[in-house]
Length: 489
Image 1 (spheres, one colour):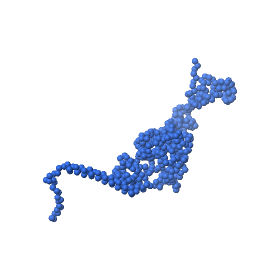
Image 2 (cartoon, one colour):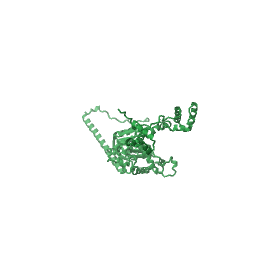
Image 3 (cartoon, rainbow, N blue to C red):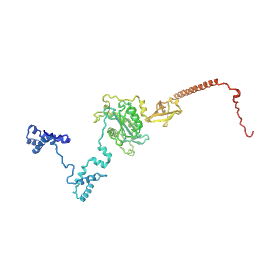
Image 4 (cartoon, rainbow, N blue to C red):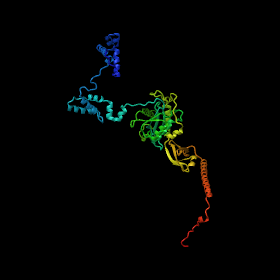
């Protein structure tokens, strides 16, 4: 029985290619009988070499044409193993040493131990041959090693709104702050993983909080006012890091109500979110770099440079986002983000109403008592005719920090009204409406009082008719007022 020839599966890809190349060079001799001398002239190879290849192929197949590795590969010939290990150990110490310092110390040790003296070039070769992963772990620690050499599981969404990512960044630009002084803004982004389209964003001076994240998520889910911005809907998965604004109980409750799966990156290791980090880099390179105030380390270096306000920067960012970023074809996905999100006639899953979404996401709830002149909140006064019937009652208000012109008022868990601030809102509650609401409330209170008095009078009348008239002697004598007497009388 013929002995099976060894397989080529254990060889590396480069070895396989080399074996196939050698086989193609000797194939004319094996199949067509072309003399080896002709093949040697064609390929500029010795005849002896071709003869050895033919012999190995006939004995072992393609495996025989694989180049054999050196048995001493990876070792340093002429140097003891302990000396090589000493050089490597010194090179891995922290802080890192120069090759000259390592060579001087190794030379002294080699003289004491009777080892051959290594040259500077040999020492340098040993140091440079060290595994980069080993050098990184020794010099920079576990965290940097994991970032550079750990295998990453890259999450990939298969359709639009299958997974959204969210993150914050402190923008490297100075804007005119609310107090007139330069300030750097925060940018919160919610990105659709499949299309790289931006579903929602928030630009502001306030550091990210759970409520800021909720407001950004509200904008991302609901339909946009700008007809150019189509991205909306409820995502299947929401992928974030372990920031406190993403791990709040309220966000967990919102995810449960909207049927969103929450996924968090490993604690302390925000891996797998390179797409949103790439977007932040694009913002710096393609948008912020064109604005005044970008790239300065401190306000002192700005001089008299004119700065944009937050509102101006927000308007420019949205215009850049919708007309440049969303319409630019990206190399990795071979499509523009907006077009990829709309691909295939996609219909997003939406909440029943904006009111329902507000109840889930607007988490700033404050307890207030309705006063005679309305609700007092943050130095402002909020009015609505409906409040006239609840003066003195405890209510819960919910508000959007971006629009303080109105607040939502809830009484015992039920929505009561939207109260407006006359100083901030264009719409005002007139004096006539207040008087009408006040008179209506007064009439209702008088009606309730009259009904209760009628019940009392009816009950007392019935009770007096049923009771016998007492004898005159049993009646209490009339009380006579006692006069106050003075000491000089």
